[in-house]
Image 1: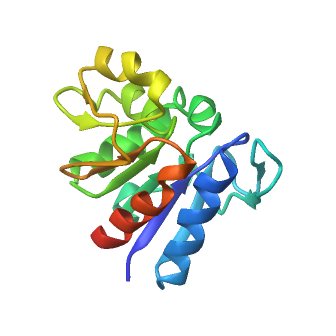
Image 2 (image 1 turned 90 degrees about the vertical axis):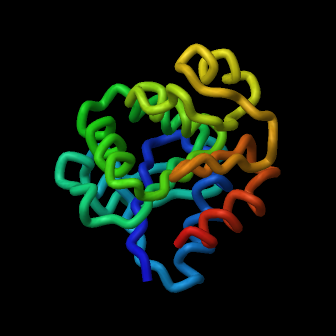
Length: 168
């Protein structure tokens, strides 16, 4: 079974964390919630879900994980300027491991400089940001490009989770 890192900060989109996290665990994979500080309580923007960070990003090693999931909401905005987050995502990408990002999740991929020449989707109002970062934007429920799995919004979660579980 795979070991999956969920990158998370406060104000995440509740279902975009809960649904993939629950399904990955139900499928028997091992998960770690990685936040800015170990033990930090992280609450969804709608107050429907909360989690405690298992590890601090400063202590997380990309080599220990088989895949990364980046839920949306405001969480990516709260993580994208952290150098440890960017280093972690770049190392996961360099190893060719799956990176699954939904909604605002690809903002972290922009800040890590990973979108040039890639085809992705995201929350539709971020289309210009994705294109300006060098990506080809597709308005589809899920877009696969190499090791990237991207989706737009909570309504796309079934396709997002399906593709994530396929690569695990």
